[in-house]
Image 1 (cartoon, rainbow, N blue to C red):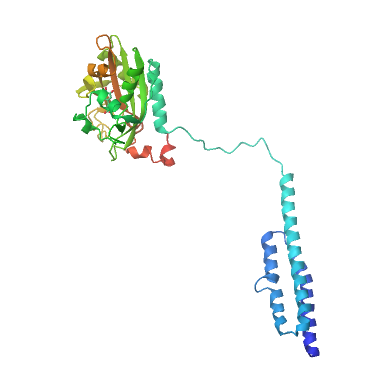
Image 2 (image 1 turned 180 degrees about the vertical axis):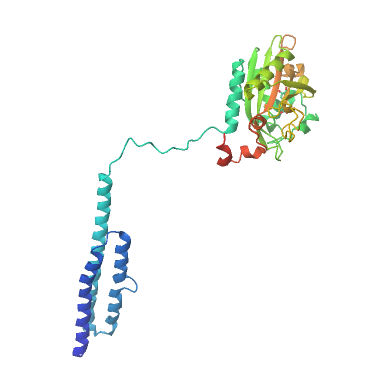
Length: 352
Ligand code: DAH
């Protein structure tokens, strides 16, 4: 072993010890974690100064290696310890600054974007409100319904062509997703004696899917049963409803039509709330300038239905109606694609 080997070891140790001062000077003015970490890397990183100097260890006589290695560990510890101490100081300083902060409690709050009821919920609640003013109460029924309540009791037997009008989702032979809210009429008549005045809003399902049809949509059913209920009562209730809902004097016309569970039956049209029947230009896209838009079906409860529901048709008469709530919302707001109601797009929903 030569003196020059020892000299090299001594020199390396000196170099390593020297880093302590150099590092202390570099870190002294720094006040943020990023620059402290950068300085740490300059010394201890992969290509850092300490590592570079320590490369020599392999060339040193074994007797000196331990000494140089110890000096390397010492500087590493010094630097790491100092970095940890400084970062700890930074955290404490931030916490102290946070505590020292004062708040101006008189500042106005930032506006907070609140949610609101879905358009269809708004329309449903409003419709219910209007009917309740006339003495109707809300009735409810299951969406997964028996074939009997949905069809049979409403005078639509299995082979009846009217079943084709309603593309039904079958759960099993005897269980369906209700295609209309009319089964709630049946459930109500079976459980409570007249006088009956109910409305039944709710989801219904049909195998239909295009811009004006969705496989799930919402109807509101109405039923009034009592002594002396007439077709005029039906028309009066419907006129009252559309006038209140659209907040202007709109009338209703009843076009003779066929629904198995009413007799006579009618299609319900209301005056177009957009053009009021005036010959506007461009032509009204809602009613196609006819001045009328269809909003549902209605009629006098068929004695056959009364019989199924154990209501005495000698004593009582009744009217029923069913309307689509999406259509109501569309006629009020001009929404032209039924999908908008269900996509949950806030850009659409926030407008209402
Ligand atoms: N349930 C019918 C449908 O969804 C609508 C309807 C028509 C309901 C006439 C009624 C009614 O109560 O009397 O197509």
